[in-house]
Image (tube, rainbow, N blue to C red; front, top):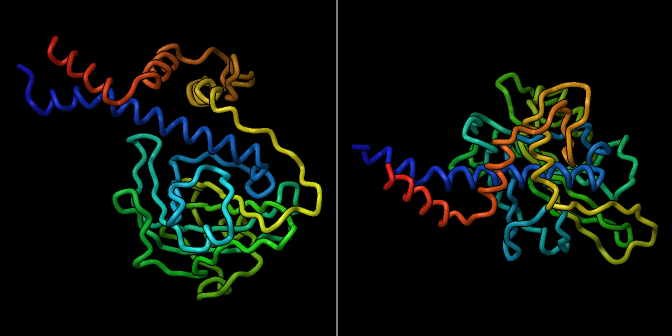
Length: 281
């Protein structure tokens, strides 16, 4: 006779797997968005998040990567939640959250970017980013792109904050929006890797200059990309199919089949499938 806790676990297992697959796909999507919008490498040299960052503005709701907002819509401080890619990633300890203006696509960011938000010591409680006991260096200041300058990319980044973190003297006390080298700050203060990030786009008026075009993210290809990136064996070749990983061989058939199959069913259907398996046992 199977015990009740095991029965419950078996029933929820398909839903958990489907949820994990969905989060993985969304993380693959944000990685693709950062490359397509040229945030990587113009602002960040690399970006390999371990979690999904969800930003919610009052009156707008959860934003999608690169969503176009008005200055008014993006003016209030958003709420931020974090979803780990899988159960092995524990969101404990302290973190730093920042938002910077990466300007328009094609901009020279070598002299720095405007800092619109910088909070050290935030905690993640039940998936929500809490700054109740954190240190606000730059309180949230909504986007304010110059009229006619084009669609600015405002990037919100969550860094892990190790015990050895030490902010530089000029950014250890509250200060307003100023020019900022986010990469130098992360390196010199001892911040850990980027855990998660996303971005919004804000434009005031119509651009008076020509803005370089970027190709759109084709989400239908992300299953193959994810499989190629995560399951390929490290080597010098390129992943098979449309994968973007560095695997030398074909993606794991079990990983590919389970991801595709689970993604095609609703969570409720999967739960009932789990119950059916349970009854058969």
